[in-house]
Length: 160
Image (cartoon, rainbow, N blue to C red):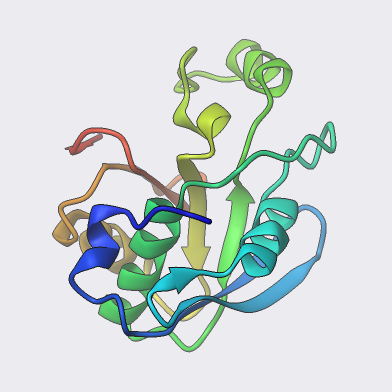
């Protein structure tokens, strides 16, 4: 059984769903992951698989609070499209490789803990996606307009 994160306690009776489109694998997922006061293990497993490190195939548990944050951001932006996933979970090896290739990849990235995701929405301007993530007041928000994505995580509240 999965414990309810703080964000779920206030609204434990609602149903929550997310839609994803992975930009690197082409995989799609539309899934209800929460309902009747609990997270659904099969749905979480499907999300873990979709958000795996596509370079190594490594699968990691994705933080349920991150899913709830994405659910909230989707509602705030009134999107009708799936989240386009640029990066979900990253293995330590992938993270280290990316650190050597480009700047801005943290040695202790929350991607390696299943607590971060890089996303965009086809029907929401990037600046509006960033604003919604910031307005949620949960975790970190990184804005990368040159690379066309927003990073969100469930670490401490901060932005860059």
